[in-house]
Every structure is written in C-alpha cells, then in structure tokens.
View 1: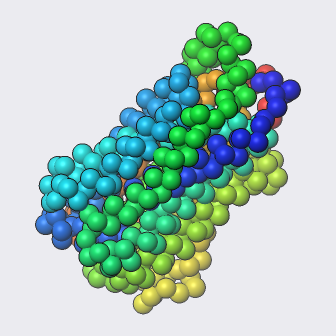
View 2 (view 1 turned 120 degrees about the horizontal axis):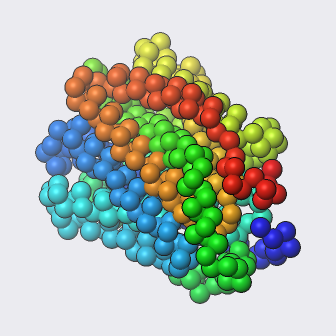
View 3 (view 1 turned 120 degrees about the vertical axis):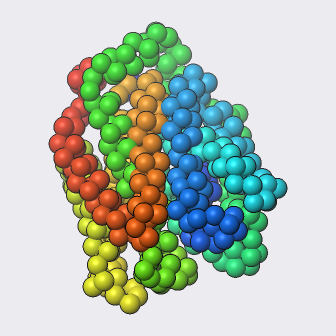
Length: 420
C-alpha cells in the first residue's frame, strides 16, 4: 500500500454504483419471499418445494458467479463486471412472464439472477480497496451491507402492493427490475470513467505480485475461516429473510397468522434495523471495538441467536407487540454487522491486488450457506408442517458461529503491511 495515493472524487460515484448494484440484486432476489404462498398457488406446487426452488436455489449460482467474478474483476476491472451483471439481472426478472408456469424455466431464470448477483457481492472488498483509503474501507463495506438490507427492505415493501395492483406474480417481477436498470446506466458510466488509483498503481508493479500474494493467502488458515464465517452469516440472513415472512403471514399451525401485509411490515422493521447495523458496523469497528474484528464478530453471532425467541407464543402474542419488536430489533442489528465487518476486514488486511480473489473465494464459498440455510429451513417446514424447527436451526447456527469466531486473527503473511 502506498500512503501517498490520492483518492479522487470519482470514488463516490463508484460507491453509489456499488450501492445500486447491491440494492438491485437484493430486490430481485427477495421479491418472491413475501408472496411465496401466492407463488406456490400460481405454480400449483407444494410450499416447501417452491420456497427452496424459487428462493434457495438462487444462492447456488451466487456462489459460483462470485468465485468466478472475483477472479475476472482482478483481471478486467469491476466496472465491466458490473455492466454484464446488470444485464443478466434485468433478464432474470423481465423474462419470467414469458415462461408461464414452467417451474424448470423459472429455476433457470433465478439461477441466472444468482449468477449476476455473485460478482456484485464478492467484489465489494475489491472496490473499497481500489477506491478508498484503508481507514475508510470498513465504513464503505458497511454501506454495502446497508444497501443489501435496503434492497431487501424495498423488495419486501413494494412487492405485495405491486402484486395487489397487478394480481400477477410474474408481472410483479418485471417491476422489480427497475433498480437493475438504474444500475445498468451507472455501471456503463463507470466503464468509461477514470481508473481507480490502486489500479493505476498496480499497472506499474510486478504483474506477478498478485499471484504470489494470493498463494501466500491460500497458505494461511484465515482465508478459510473467513469463508466459514460468511457461510454461517449467510445461512442466518437468508434463512431469516426467506422463511420469516411465511412464518408471520401463514395461518396456524403452519405460521402465526398475522397475514401478508402485517408480515411485510414486520420484515420491513427487521430490515431497517439490519440496515442500521450494517451502516454503523464500520464505525463500531473503529471506535467501539477498536478494530477488534474478532470481538465484533463474536458478539454479532451470539446476539443473532436471540431470534430463537420468536417461536414462543408469549413473544409473538396475537400480533406485533413490544417484546416481539425488541427481539427482532436486536437480532437484526447484530446480524447486520456480520458480513460488512468481514468484508471490511478483507479490504484492510490483504493487499489490494488480491482482494477480488480473496473476497471471491470467501464470499463465493461462504454464500453456499444461503442454499443450505434455506434448504434446511424448507426441509424442516415440509417435515414438521410448521416453522418451529426452522427457527431453532437458526439459533444453533448462531451458536456455532460464535464458537468458530474465536479463531479469527489477522493473516500472518501480511502483518507487516502497516494496517492496524
């Protein structure tokens, strides 16, 4: 890292583009979740199967696309990757009305959207490392975490009323592609914009330095621990986001019977708190945790586990109440700090020219947690006929994450880089 690098004002445009990309993929990803009962009726399939195929399988190509996208971004630049991903994301939504009730075709389109999402997510560390000085990077990755929650919040908030207006799940998905259209325009501008200062610096460095440093990273266990943390946090996030709307909306004994609109409002509150937790994660890391990332991750895992209490009738009551709001708020705030804190750690602890590959590997492999999480929840739902076991699984995963996080430390090969 060169302390004399001048970071241009265009970095804020790059940040806005990243934020729109993360928001856009979140909207397209989550939009079917609050409508999952209607989607199942439309397709004429069992609820657990539809939940897994329409929501869970999305993450399969997120992982694969993320690993490939991280490598490609290190080679051709993030802007070009963004441009291609924006096109794929748009197609994954606007083509749904043309395939009708063909479940196989819908799965293909959802997998296409996941493939577009992977590189957007896994290059966050790379973008912040290219465009921002080290002290700002955890805050910027916190912005990315906020954007993820904001996109999910928008999807949860507008999908039900758009569905009420159109009475069509496929047509609703076309509307969900609008943020992706904005992302397309921004990424195109970014393609023709100035190069990031770190990219300019790399062009004058040893071109083989990145390969050597990445080999050093692979020889240290921290990179694999990061993948584990992402796996577990993504399990928690995807399981809660995909399963909770149904849990609140569906009638007993399957759910608690709040209805679609109330479930949507509760999830909007949850996501607002998740977004707030993500947004302040970098500030907390620097000023409260004093850059003790391990402690922040430990606390984020263990307090995510209080989600367990939503399974008790005294908490859910007969509708939204103060105790339920407190439980959901604490869960969301600390869960929201998980992924941004890990991304900030990658951006600060590894050389800039390998952050794409480190982030791609950690996030790409780790994002499989979403597949496993939704799959486990959907299987438990199918086997038991209610959401109680799915809620218990989430808390068990949070406890496992707390135990594994005790092993986090800075990567030994790069401890002399001058980062704190």
